[in-house]
Image 1: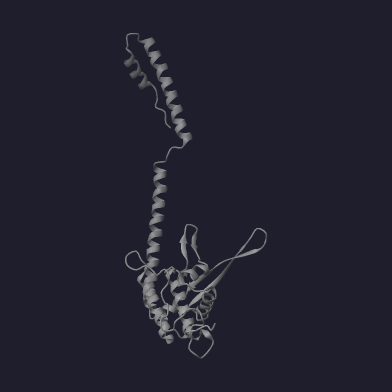
Image 2 (image 1 turned 90 degrees about the vertical axis):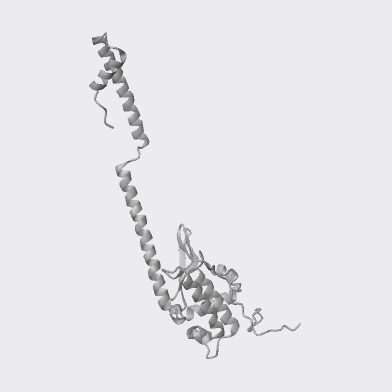
Length: 256
């Protein structure tokens, strides 16, 4: 049976109706992705229809000819997915976790873009060649002496924003993000210092200190009873309350 190629190398690509939306699009509105990210992702789509918008990426095919449409489609989709998970202050791609900022493997971006492994890898090579993305390989030494590769650290280049006319906006947003981070860290440090100071001023009794207090109270009650008995013997006409009142005056208060 003869296969029909509509112009996309049998990958399901239609040059006239490209697929430029992620399977799970970026969130918009309140609580969504930052406006800078959304605006940059939108401008990236223009590259499909106007390859001269990003000359370096258009030249990633190593030819003087314009990059094929299915290749541009892959590049736009992957670049959007990377931007969607970019941390504005550092431009690193990943997700924050209790153990720190974690990079995402390529398999994640393949699922989010709907690209095959080969198309996603080629798109990443193109983005890297064009200077849109930088990669830092991570390897971990195992106990048996072998090495295990981790998801490479992916960082978006500021040049992408400059090429798309978003350079100044990026500088403003990164400055505001760093300021918010510094304020949050300062507030956390202040809270920690105040907590330490309050602990020093009002220390929480430990179990051993509470036990010592209890023992001191028992000893004080015993001495109070002894002194009250001595006073009763010396003053047989005093009642019980008077004996204990005088005994209280004679016994020095214990300091804990």
